[in-house]
Length: 456
Image (cartoon, rainbow, N blue to C red; front, side, top):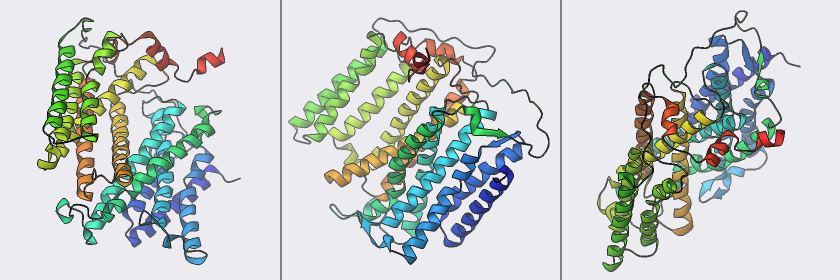
């Protein structure tokens, strides 16, 4: 059996060789993926944490490179798989993206192990798998940026003005391959990983080894999100208030726009249905509050109402077609709302998971940023599937898709930075108390999979 240091050295050699080959071939995505793997392999040694990943994790870092080499040998020497296409894109693109997603998933799991063990974050095994899946999706978004540059340099049409109505957008399909494959491949990897780690303790993900010098016990710094002094958040009134009025007014206005759109003959079917759905969705925070399930903060409710109104206004009154950057504005505002929703969800898990999940310092902001990059990939893939299945033009051009991704990233980063500073002077648990969660919802957060009940 290989010693762990020999195994790590082998993995580093494989990743380095792959990075050199990728650099020589101009494959910037594989170059970045290999650099990420190298960095995570070296990090325990550099930080001298006194442990290393277990053998299975280190072996997994070599699986994707081995599969890539094996595939290209098979493709060139045995059977030309790359000559066949799916949606006018070579099979090689899909297979390569699947291998990249596997390598990124492994790197994401390694990063989750490090953050859980040495960087102040506490995660359950399922949260580790979720984090790895989101890392895989987030890196696929980076591949989208590289592909856009390649398409532009290669002379492909990439801007809105390069296309006429009804023209085939082949470059869109090339652009979205990596997020499209990563969406489904990472889900498969997550299911397999969840099954594999189900019967293992988190301590088994690492093994103690002497790195540069004998490891000495170190006191973990107190990185709790709860500072010594904090400004308490006032619990909102359970009765009718400004937040309810905002939701009701937004609902009435959007339904009114739907009626106006129909009467003016502007839009029908899909657009009007979207308007009605948006109008009714504005009432969800009111229903949740008065059903005593959760009371959302007023700032969040205002953000929800603004995001829904802007989208409905653009769909029903043709603003998406008339105003060039209207789509960018709606994507930015929507990413702010989704980021806030993710933040509040993580806050609840931090407060009510009985220590199973802990986000300390800026680790919550990092987690939110990764999740939002993954969500951006999900949304663009959804638009791509709708365009392919129903012949719509939700992704009008590669530039339109790239701009949406940048808007989502900008919105999520703004929220991550703002909330990161906000939590330094406010107690997280007091914020969660203001949500007035229903007891059953709190019980679900404490034991979402019924593990404690099965133990009993």
